[in-house]
Length: 113
Image (cartoon, rainbow, N blue to C red):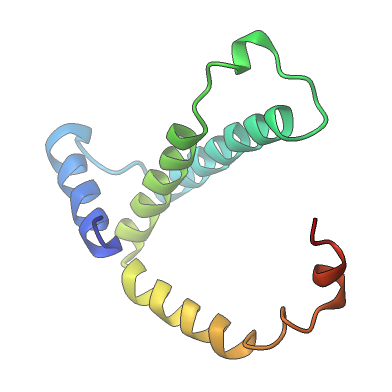
């Protein structure tokens, strides 16, 4: 599997050779919101209480999540964010901060099915 840095490079190469240029940050933010909405629709209908329309049954959750990732990477690239570094810092912070937090959370223990 490719690392996040490799994905950022791959998206940048795609933009330069096929995509012509990055959409501006506000357009990409709107696109990200749209893609997250598509993921939410699938989750709500497939795993939630809403009924799934026939047209929704062909939607691929993995593809929609990949669309979210693609636009997120575009935003990172055009704003100079190193997602690999940010990911490592975030996971370190979460691991340090939450080391015992979830293990001692009675609500989580009570919801095990």
